[in-house]
Structures are given as C-alpha cells and as structure tokens.
Length: 340
Image (cartoon, rainbow, N blue to C red; front, side, top):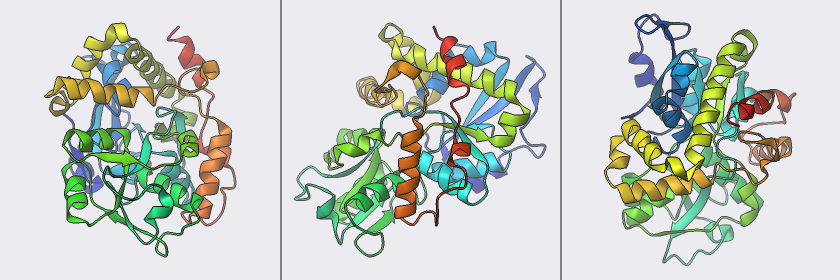
C-alpha cells in the first residue's frame, strides 16, 4: 500500500547511498523509484498494472512507488535525484522550469482534464462567477489542482487574493469537513477526489466551463539529464508504462487490473464496487480525444495555453525562453509500437 508523505519524510526514509543507479543484486534488476502526488494506485494505474504484469521486470527494472504530497514535492524529489520518474501536473512543471529546474514531461497520462471545480450539490453557485469573494479549497498548496483552478478563475476575469482565495484543506475526509464547516465554498478536485466525496455522502457538482477539458492533467516526468545521459532507461520505463496503460484499457483484462490496483493500495480495494467505478472514471480521462498520435502524446498548442494561463494568473512572471524544452513527444511513437 502506498502512503502519502511530505517531501522531508520521503528523503529521511531513503538509504544514505541514494537510489539512482543502484541494482538489485538478487535478481539483477535496476531499482527505480517512481513518486506520485497522492497515495491512490488508481490515479497511477498504468504503473501498478505494469508492475503486476511484469512489464517493468521484462525491461530489467524493479520499480518502487512512493506517494508524497503534491506535484511540487514530486518535482523536488526528481530534482534532488531521489526519484527517477514522477507524475506531476503540467502547470507545476512549467513553474519549476521558470525557477531553473530541468524537469521534462515525457508521457501525457491524463489526456483529458482530470480536474474540476466542484461545489456542494445543493449550492446556489452555478458557475465560476458565483465564486467571486469566495474560498476555493485545494488538496495541496502547490499541486496541479491549484493551477487548474487558477486557470478557471482567470478565465472568468478574477484574480487570486483579490476576487477569491485558496485554502489548502487536504483531500478525502478533510475536504468533507471543510465543506461541512463552511471553511470553503468550492473545491478544486481531481476525478478521484470528486468520486470519493460523492461516495462518502458529500454530493458535489462540477461547475467547470467545458472549454477547460482541453487542459490535460498529470503525466510522467523525468529530469533532462536522465533523457540526455540515461536514454535507455527512459525508453525502457516508457515502454513498460505504455504497455501497462494499454493493458488496462482493454476490458478483457479488467479483473487482473483491479487486482493489481488492490495490491498497490489495499484500502482502495476494500469496496470493489467503488474501486471499479473510480477506475472507470480515471481511466476514461487517459484516453486521448484524438488517437492518431497514440497514447501519451502531448499537443504542443495546449502547452502554450497552459503557459499563457500561468502568466495570466501570476504563477510565472513571463513565458519560458523555450517552452518546448518542458516536454517531449520523441519517445511516443516507439512506445506505441510496443503495444501494437
């Protein structure tokens, strides 16, 4: 089972020798660490499926999954050399690059937006304009859900701190408490977060304008040095990951997929009906609207829109000198060939 940790706790738990470049002597597998921004196995389902089906092992890799708190912490772990791959959001990657962090997106997992701004089902608020002067809760202080909500509010002509405020409340139970106490009027949630709230009796309704569906969500990132100096590792990782993704999209494999996800996070598998429904909701968001470029492809024009929204929202002072360096589609064709 994966558990969420702060970045400091994550570093403290690591062996002093570090993780990069080590090998598992018993099986001669290279040990690789993957960091995700929440404990959910379902949100990172291709990783757990690729582990369970032995795809990483076939590539000579032994993958350990660590859950830490949000995209910012994922990018810290990558830049500190304490993880090889992670699943941050595109907004945090652009923001990190503006500070000189050479993180690179290599695979678009949430090809359709996996975030939404939700309100209580019985709320009078019908659209983002209704949140003027209100409080929007978020799971983390610097996760992808924050950038997404800021985009939505900027699109409605509002500025953080002046027209609305963010409040970090956590996810799951804490988010329910924040709604019930009136601490927040809306919540910037992932598909999984909204499903969990509904399952726990906190019925919510999405008020995100439909045009924001094009803002793809979290994907796989690594460091530029890894791409330049350890290209074979990137190719192996992505090949196994894409195979896990494709396997999970085939309904014939559903039983095996759900078993792998339960092994990754037993708590999510305690209620099979809920696990299955949540997996369906998350999986749907990983299927590109246009499959002509295959799984994992990132539309460059949407990266431009992400960057423009970050500038407009004040998250970065100016556009990056080279936005194209923030992502690469160079591996996508080869990885898709591996699953055909």
